[in-house]
Image 1 (cartoon, rainbow, N blue to C red):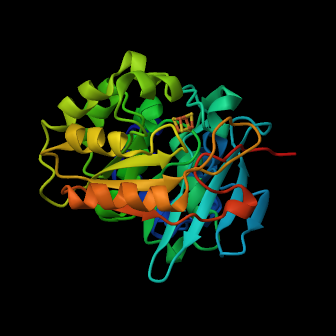
Image 2 (spheres, helix red, strand yellow):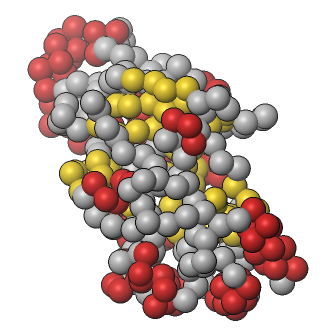
Length: 332
Ligand code: SF4
């Protein structure tokens, strides 16, 4: 809960207004795991809170460790213990990034994504999102959080805004919004609101600049064409601290030749942004293959030569199905 939500809760219970601030301190600064530990609240207040609330800490039910140090955690959600979600911890030299999920499954149906093929089974609460950070042993070492796990953030936007507010507010964790990146396939109403109401970085899943071809792998293109998404993004200033990036997964023979590189450069002309190329991680369930390393290199070189900053995202956690597009949340 955010501070205003806790103030509302306290008002409803007849508690003094400052109790909400005390609750924030316990939840987000001291990260109390039990209401009984909140020792500057009266015994009566703690008893009342215990009747109607719970902290929602929920330790992972499984952890798989990759050869490269990446860890994939499996959590049960608090609302439905049959539902599972996955969270990926990615340590690097001087960084430690956590990739969190925001939904159980996903409605977007991207053809290359294991999560998308599961269908949609529910939204996570802000508590379930924050729990993915708070309940892993590496929490203190995290430098960045990316909302790139299971689900489409703009389809659960109120919750994403609550969770990112807790992470960035002075009464919460007080992180800089520069440590947080939220991804989207480009749901325009949600994206517009997010751009207006948040300062966190934005990553748009692009994957193909040719509308008819993008539609073949990303059904969202029919409702929210990429051209309209780019037109919206052009209305914002990207020259400051806030970063705009585009995710581009490389599929052999589908989106990886020079024509695609050229159309991508044309589409992004004048936008202050960067492109992250991602190797496609083949799975028996998806009828795509990954581009040849030399093709990826040529694509990257073409973009860089034509003024688009382009990096190749290192593949992490592939041996434990923790890489991009492979999260399934299978509890069995
Ligand atoms: Fe959903 Fe992202 Fe998978 Fe698309 S790639 S189906 S938006 S989880």
